[in-house]
Image 1 (cartoon, rainbow, N blue to C red):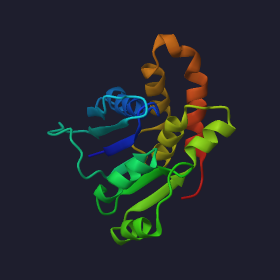
Image 2 (image 1 turned 60 degrees about the horizontal axis):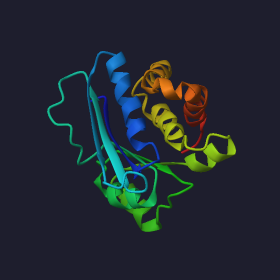
Image 3 (image 1 turned 180 degrees about the vertical axis):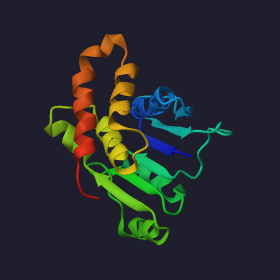
Length: 185
């Protein structure tokens, strides 16, 4: 499988949009894809997550119970899903909103799970990109995994933005670039 990603956070953080953009890259590359959203009835402020699977073979099950990759945008999602990541997997976390306890970090290390903290929310606010922490995170995921090319991700983003929000394209592309260029682990 090329990508087995679970994205989780609160409703309103762009979790589903982030997954939609990642999934659209597969359509552009003629691959098989599944995008499975899950959210509480509250939507904004409630829990939200989505599973994205991309492969060159048919995907038999869109459910991800043991993700290879986890991108989390809030503490409750980190607490809930961190221990489900496969041994050797990767966790991308918004370090502006999430703090992995020493015990959590130790359990991840024991299983060979790498943590990739990136202060997405702080970066978005500092750069005038409020509400784009999700795309900063997606840029970082792309940088560390190479699940598609940078150009394909940008094309997918352009395709996923509705006409009514076309004015947001430049700031969204800037957010992806910011995450992609973020150094360090």
